[in-house]
Amino acid sequence: MHQHEEGAATGRLTGWPLSEFRKRKLEVRFTGSGSEYFRIWIVNLLLTIVTAGLYWPFAKARRIRYFYANTLIDGHALSFHGDPWKMFRGHVLLMALMVVYSLAGHFSPVAGLVAFGILALIWPALWRAGLQFRLRNTAWRGLRFGFSGSLQGAYAAFLPLWVMSGVILATQAIGGPIGLGANGAPRFGLFEKMVLGAMLLGALAAPWIITMVKRYQHGGYRIASQQGDLRMAAGDVYWLCLKAFGVSVLVTVVTSVLMVMATLGVGAFSAQSRTAAGAILLVIIALSYLLYFAIVGPFFTARFQNLLWNATTSEDLSFTSQLHVRPLVWLTFKNWLLTALTLGLYRPFAAVHTTRMRLEAVSLTMDGDADAWVAGNAGDNPGAAGEFAGDFFGIDMGL
Image (cartoon, rainbow, N blue to C red):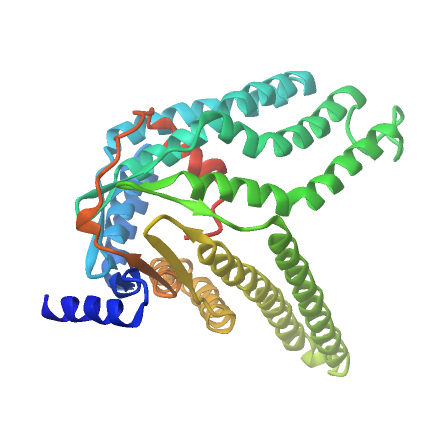
């Protein structure tokens, strides 16, 4: 208390804003371990298999609770209070919707188009409900999170994606299978051009759609009286996507050169030793593909996480993310390699290591004291079906 009063007095003497002395940095720590999570993961996996997937909502609730309980912000852990039985009802509902959509497409293209239209009509509402359910059941220091995004905002965020997808499906329903004429010969007519145009437009609009979705998500996040705000420009996302494309081209060239060199090396072997050389070539090709995805994916993930969270603020909170590409690339490559060598048993260890790296790259700056925050209204009471809608279709490239 004496130090605080001294700091305030210093602020008055120097003319600096008093808020500068109230700000403090909140570190994020993750204390989970691979061995602990392995026990949870293996039980979840076995029970999910035995129950033909019906245990999945309960497995998900256990997983969330473990990761939340080991995520410490300023020394205080997050907590999850979601009811797995509500998640189970949502799981069954979502499964039923996906089965209906899948079966409709087998009957006729028109039936598939109708089913897609119905799914597109209700999906943004379910996705929004998923955000509400997850955040409403998340707490820190006794303060509940929430999501205040409007229903109209959810539909607006996904509208461009649905329109382009609808054009593709409608074109297929009217014009028949793409690339085949009446006699089965290849074709490239008006319908094919429309589909190609819609796909190209979708690729060009993808960064803008990502920006729209993330603005809606982060703008709706809430804890107590703190309302989130995302100041991320679509141009920044376009520039990041362009750089990621450049990295992918560079990695493709390098891996292609390695594969050509390996192929030429195999040709130099004698006929007796070519079998062993062929096996070595297959290993090199597999490692080249692994190298490609272990570099491009982590590059985009790290840069996008930093871009996203550095642009997220509230009235008394700001975030700083300093996730570096090189450590994440190495960790991803190691995780994938060990997961393959252990036939998937290393997966829980990989999840823990990746979560620790991504979480501990983030810190918060708080202006004031969380004890002074006044909790906002509890908000809506959405159905838990939306919790799994988020899993099926939610775009989540940040934390």
